[in-house]
Structure formats: structure tokens, C-alpha cells
Length: 79
Length: 316
Image 1: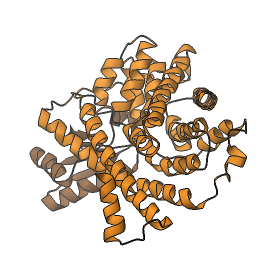
Image 2: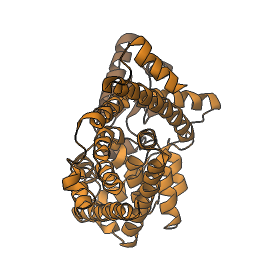
Image 3: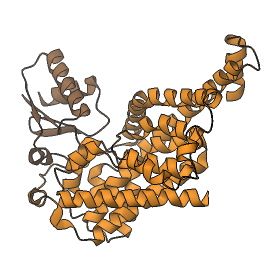
């Protein structure tokens, strides 16, 4: 599974990354988490950061950040 | 009811002596804290609910190819309700330009969004009354409108970084369908999120208010930055520009300045400068704007905010 965290590097993007890591660990799945700071790449998906992309699909963007449960759900439905 | 509760806590539960300075301060603190948090939760919830109808994608569509002026007004208004995090300023800017939102209209949005928001308005309302809050809301929108309008008129498109015009936004930017329940859920989460972030600042602000009220001499700052000093406004704006804070963070300072007798115009100008213009934001915007445009932006904002400050000092 491929997970991308979209964000130019602010506090919220950082939290988003942590959330994804925790979710992946707790779900015990194999996933590659990649941080995307490149604007052109981010803009392919959304203009509200932070964003969460699972297997090429935009699952969340903007504030407020989703809860850990929500993130797990987003990852599971793509799994 | 709130008054009775505050007295109950102060005199019965804490058994403070009536008529003492401490008791008055504590009563004031309890009353204000409860009042402001209630206001804050109700208003943020309401605004968040409205907000769920205006994700950036929809705002972008509304503003795309809008005429100047009407576009500037709409952009300033949408700036209040569209969710915005300072770190999304750049992607948002690119998204707007790519969708054909005029440059000046985009700026109206970028100015209004951090400066005029529900947290700022509620805090001003709770601490200084609705008149000051309405004043801030009105002038904030006005500054965003004028600032964006002038930038649009100056035709500065050439000073936007070239790559911005080349980016093409991918598909899949559908606006997610939301039902009523989703919106309530979103509003609830957003309210919790914001209150969690701002509560320490508010407690500090109210605490400072009580403290200064009783203990610090009134004319300390007034001597230097009071209504008699014609340079008070520019000084306040100049101090505010390099400082960075969101609306909640600046409130304790604003409260302190106001309590010390600074003129309303001076304090509001300071608050606008802090929230609308900041060094970190300039550095972020530098990614999409060339230096001349950035300089024009800062210049126009500084002048407009200063003018607003003088105007209020003159009429209030």
C-alpha cells in the first residue's frame, strides 16, 4: 500500500504524518508512507493541506485533521 | 445567571471576603471566562457549519472569472468562512490563479482569511463589546477589499512566479457530498479543534485583564502611545508587522494595550498588522510571488491599516 502525506511542512502536516504512521502500525499492514512537499505534486490532488492520499486516491484534505479512527478507516477501505 | 454563579463560586465555595480586591478580580475572571467560552463555542460551531458549505474548491469556483470589485467583495467575505491554514496559502494561491480567479481577488481572499475570522470577532466581542467586534469585522473586510482591489488595478501579474501559471491541477478534486449530519459532525470537530488550540490564550487574556485592571498604573503606556502621540498608529503597525500570531494569540496583548488606555484605532491597527502581515507568511508567499509584488503587497497593507487606525482614532 502507498500512503502519501501532502503538505509543505507545517505543524498540521507533521501531525497528519504521525497519524498515518500510528494507523498503519495499529492496523498491522504493510505500507510505504511518503511525505510530499513538492507543490506541483500536491496540486495534483488538492489545494488544502494537509492531505492524505491512499493508493493514489485523495482521502482527506484540509483542517480539521481527522481522528485516528477515521484515518484507520480511510486506509482500511483501500486495503 | 452567570453573575449569580460567579458570585456563588467566589463567596460561597472559595469563601473570599466580600469587597476585597482579590474577590472582585476572581469574580470577574470566572464570569468572563465562562461568558467568552460559551460565546466562542456557539459562534465557532455556527461558523463551522456554514463553512462546511464552502470548501476551498467551491470558493475557487465562485470566484473564478469574477469581475473586479464584486469579486473583491465576495473574496473578502468568503475569506471569513473558508477554512484556511497559513501553510496552505501557497497551494491555495496557485489553485485560485489556475482557476482564473483574478490576482487582486485572490489577494482579497488571502488578506481577509487570516485577519477576519470568528475567533477574533468573538474574543473582541466578549472582551470589549459588540461595537468593537463589529468595527474590526467591518474594517478588516474593508482593508481586504481595498488591498486586493489596488493590487488588481496595478496589473502585477508579471510579478507572480512563472511556474504558477504552468501548474495544471489534476482531476479528482470533486467536492465531497455531505449530508446534514456530516456537516454537524464537521462543525463539532472544528469547534473542539479550535477551542483546544486557543483556550490558553484566552485564559491569559482574561487573567491579564483582571490583573492590569487592579494593579498596573493607568497612564504608563498612554504617555508614550496615547491619543496625543500622532505617531502611535504607525509605531503600532511597524511593531505588528514582524510579530506573528493568530488572532487568538494576539488577544492578550490587545487586551493589555486597550486596558492601558491606548486608543481603539491604534490597538485595532496593531491587531490587523499582526494577523495579516507577518514575516513567516512573507517567506511562504515568496514561493509564488516575486519580490516587487511582495513589497507592493506589504506596502499597500501597511498604508491601509495605518489609515484605518487614524480614521478610528479620529472618529471614536
